Amino acid sequence: MFYAIYLVGAIVWILMNIGGGFGNLIQYMDSATAMFILVPCVLALFCTGSLGAFGSAFLFAFGKKGGSVVSHKESLLAVKMVMRISGLFGCLGFLIGMFASIHSIKDFSSMESTGWILLDLPVAMISLIYPLLVWIILTPIWFMLKKHVEGQ
Image (cartoon, rainbow, N blue to C red; front, top):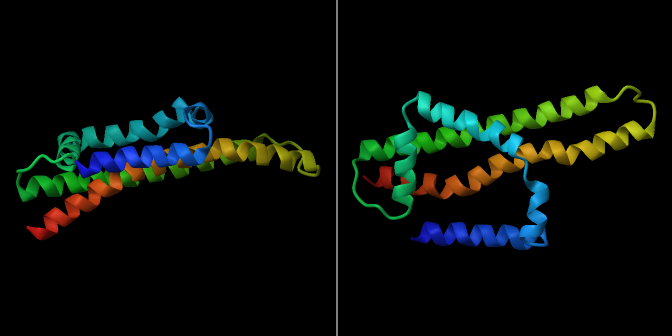
C-alpha cells in the first residue's frame, strides 16, 4: 500500500517540477529510446528465467504476504539485474547518441558545429532519463526485498 502512495507521489512530484504537467511531458517521450532500454531488460529476465520473480517483487511491494526467503532472494536479484541492465543500456544509448552527433560534424573550426553538438545533447540525454525512471520505480522494491531477506 505504501508503495502505491510512493509511486503516485513520485509521479506528481516529477510532473510538478518539469513544468506544464502532462503537456510538457511529451518532449521527454521517445519510444525508440524506451525500447532500447526496456527490451534488453525483458530479454535478460526471460533468458535467465527471472520474469516470474520480477513480477513477484511487485506483488510483494503492493502488500502480498507469504513466499519463501528463496523466492524473495530471487526477486531481489531480478530487480537488481533490471536496474543494472537499464543503467548500462542508458549509458550506452547516451554514448551512441553523442558519438553520432560528434561524428556528423564535418568542420570543427566553426562555432556553429559546437552549437549543433549542444543542440543534440538533450536528445542524447533522454537515454539517461529512462534508466533513472526505472531506478525511481524499482529502488523502493529493492530496499523492501533486501530488508525482508536480511530479516529472515
